[in-house]
Length: 532
Image (cartoon, rainbow, N blue to C red; front, side, top):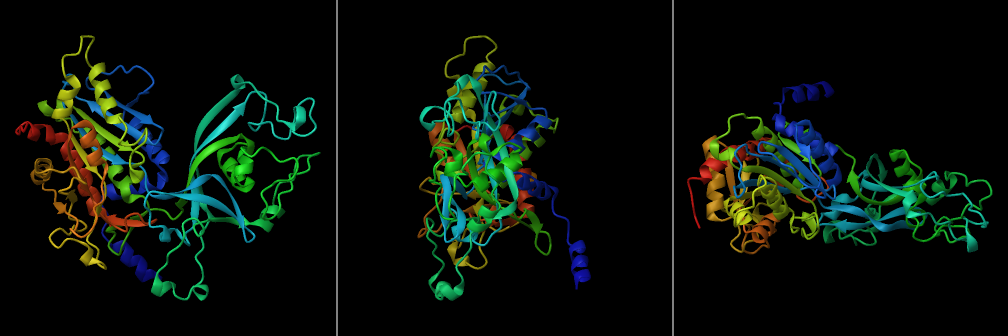
């Protein structure tokens, strides 16, 4: 049987290269921070120059640039060789974040003889899918380095004049801010270290008939270890210390423990040790972090015919990947139209879409406007800018808001509007909503569809049922905030917002091809139509 299965797998058609590359991208991009880091590496390899928003920009026509914000949002752009201030920007926007469970500022929890990690829900996830999964941890950590001290805080060292922790009255010795240096690091623990166990059916006999309805505060606590094992494996305290004496279910109130705002008081020491081991630092050097739980099961090409991608975070890293690939591919074509050489191709990958985009690094921020203003200003060539440069750029520009779409579900076919049922392998879905939950208009849809038609790329349409609420995207936010023409599109997928989603491999190819064609040919097509 094993031989037959291997033979069948070998006979399955090879998936499109774009889908295979997406899987590699996903496996490196566990968080928004890691996704931005992966994009940064690819851009640098392609010859893009990194800019800082804190410094003056010196740009050149024909140049390729990018910048990050909060290291969870990234903007990349290539300037046409004939660009002049006031010309168009052709933009694809997507987002780097996905629903997940994030560690709370005080995550140390203990109950029933277990050490647990307190988490908060981020976005609108299908939280039931997070139960009984093998979970790792990833995100960013801030390390604190103090000159003349090891471990960041000089823990275990008594300062002069104090018997317990240094200083008068047992207070920790203060250091000058000039001695302190903070370091930003990414971290990923890719082995299963956490799990959220479900309740056995023997203790919840009606779960299959009444439904699984966990309380996200009390039931969504990942288990880190048993208290007894943690205590038996706890490192020995330094010589002369009383060890702190945390009980199996206590909170470490014994004499000699640190202040409540110290990381070791807010998080389990075992968790800090895991992070420190991965980072190659002392646990005491960890000042703070922004961490989330991640499924350790890798993304994969799947299905009997290699036609699916099974993965977390398809919404919306699949769109982010395709946008970046298209930007890089369009720049390699070498056959630019005069119209394309006169504008700017741009990709904007925002954070915080899943919670409304209202943040300094979200689509609700002025980042798009900031980028357009600064590119126009930096390309003025020393002359005083003419009237309405930015406004003219905005009215000539176009945004493709890319976010995954709802595939027609084989087990819930009635959930889709009968005339709008997107299928896998049938191309990108243009999203419409009369109440502007999507920013698509007849004009923007026709322009985007025509690009597909000219290149033989399939395209579909989606409208939500009248008796069902409609989701939204960054599209209306960018359109209303900047007054820029926008179309909302996305590749069809199933299990959206589950810890494990799925989409079609052909649609990843269609998405990359369609976005590449947009960058290459939209300027010429758009020049044929003027609507004020």
